[in-house]
Image (tube, rainbow over all chains, first blue to last red; front, side, top):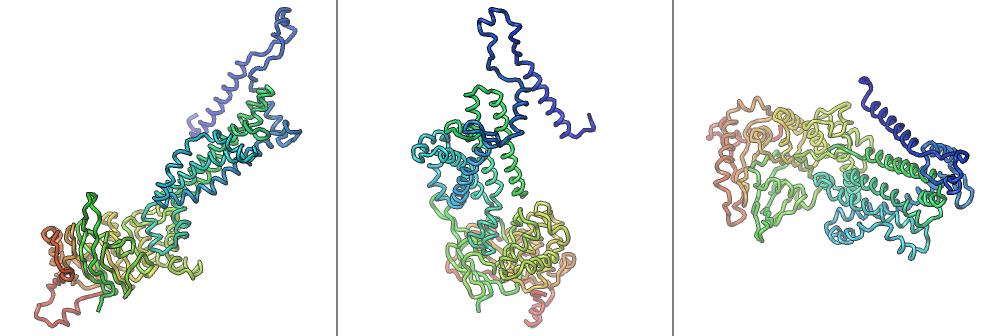
Length: 277
Length: 301
């Protein structure tokens, strides 16, 4: 045990925790009695009818295997593969998110550079920021008249704030020495922005982008439950209506895994732009 | 005739936070000749850094002008290179890239290869060669970082090089080595240098002339002390020179006593604010002809 590295020991412990968790879960689900073993009274009182209960992990694993071995099948509006559902969700998240980045990063730059812009825009930001993105949904549906675009709008509105604030904060915090270096080298405003301020503020900006993508992924599930049609959020809700809890648990797991991958992607980007002073 | 760099009636006032005004210095007037190495000495708060920022074009004076080479200084320019106390290297760029950054800004028409070659040459001149130049500044020691900063400034051949306490953050031994490096790289050029320091010995080693500032507020450049020690100088030899301790004592006396006594004296009439020229020379009898004495003034050898 001693010669194993910390990482190896941690991995071992993780696997152990996973297995014991699954075993406890499996045992905790009472197995349904076979109909033949029931008394007459039990049969009459409906005990033998199949009950919707929380499925044991073994069933979830079987379900996962089925779904993941054919993730992209499409058998009509209410029966699409998990891959297709997740792709819809990712498409919405990225569309809203990229729109938000397109506006938040330049605007954040402006706010960070100009104390006037900061003071003028701050009250609006402070009021708009704490609004739950789903609260915009009715208004968005009414104005946009399109559920697909409304979902994207909700993603847009929830991911804009962390990026906007972090960009402004990062840009405002760029050390004046570095800006002076740009000035004494006669760099123009655009060149200064791209060669000095952007790389200097990049770690803070990317942190904001990472927070935003996390929030966007949280919100898309709820948004799709509301607008329906496609997407992982709709899938969860649809399976709940079908009382297929195995699918519900499986999709919950998938939401977690995709969220983790999105976060890891930005973690990678974060390491690329990081620097030590 | 005006000197190469002429500071005329420079005044800087800041609001003191209570509705009044704080005058840092008033009507400061002095000049720097081409190729001269001038060091300004004074206590903290006397406005040395403010003068430096005005010369760099990073700050505007309340009144007065700075004229360099016949042109008024307005805003920062590549003609005035700055070495900041805290190195001011861009931490996300490698050492080499930090220098090419400056070279490319100075010579936009050069090819990438030319820029890299020029930058590598100047890094070599401050003793940075090989793998080191591809490291990030955070992987370098303080002394090495300041060398990079010096290389960046010299590589651009500015008309005026401003050094803002460049060795202030270094330990004494490292400081000594880099002072030698600076003397070496400066010796090969006609570079005009204006430098701020707290360190008297450093000032004597490097300077042709030392400007002494009184304490603030209402600080002024009170004296201009010529360093009558021939070049090339080395730290071990100059202490043997008969003028060394005479000059040093004068500077210590000024900073220790007279900078306080002279502080806050508001003079009327700006022209009288020109620093008093002081020349201390124990090597020649005073009755010798003027030419003989001038020959000892070693500017730039």
